[in-house]
Length: 352
Ligand code: FE
Image 1 (cartoon, rainbow, N blue to C red):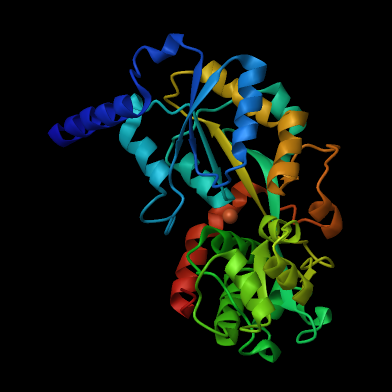
Image 2: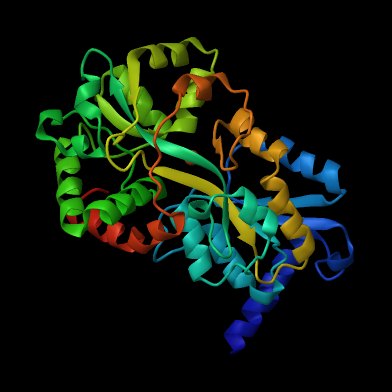
């Protein structure tokens, strides 16, 4: 009890220092946002909201270097949990479906009823208390001339012995890979998923390291010949003027996986209103703004993600060049169900 009390006091002190007096904020037109989206260009997105509503967004951006979701939660989730009822946070925005589900399981989100969000966001991309605002696909990247596109039509191919010594990967504990593995468990069951993970590890060209962009570069540099990467990293390289990025793009090919079966695994960026949000009305307004045409276009044009709202006209040459694809319709909420199992299997087979 004593510990709890001092912890809360400490949280309050930290919070007040971070946001000014948190107690008088209820009357102000502000919104306190905890964001783990690591994209500098998001500034324009927040400015659009302030222009529309007159509500100023105070932002706390941490949680960029995240290690492992279960056991130790995200920095931001941990922070919101520690702050408890004193948390000034109104909205949590983050990436990865399993991470958003973790926030749900911790009871951090408030249930939200919004006809606008229900009408605009497809049912498989929202839950009762958190919503996806953009999607990204995890695609196959291969070295042209080394691997044929026919050899990498499915995530299953990553485990095929003919790709021995040719696969690069970021860490198995990274949320993007855990969510991909969760989708494989959901579709194929644990036993097959474990076989798959073993096969992928047996095909590694090197121990997992770096981020998605590092895997793409490693494929182009000939360190390996196949990797998976999120589409916005690819699009970023495709839109880059740097000669080295142009060379990277010239050397690689991209395949939408599993187009003949369940479709390419997609992950999301999303968020929700927090249970102890001091400005619930502003928070809901903000979520509805994120689903507006303007904000949806921003996700596409500014950060190379796909809008969740249908029929948004986008202006992004890289997304246009990537073209249309079949996305796995698995509900985002269910990825979380297999997340812990995914980590256990990865640990067992040495996918570190
Ligand atoms: Fe990312």
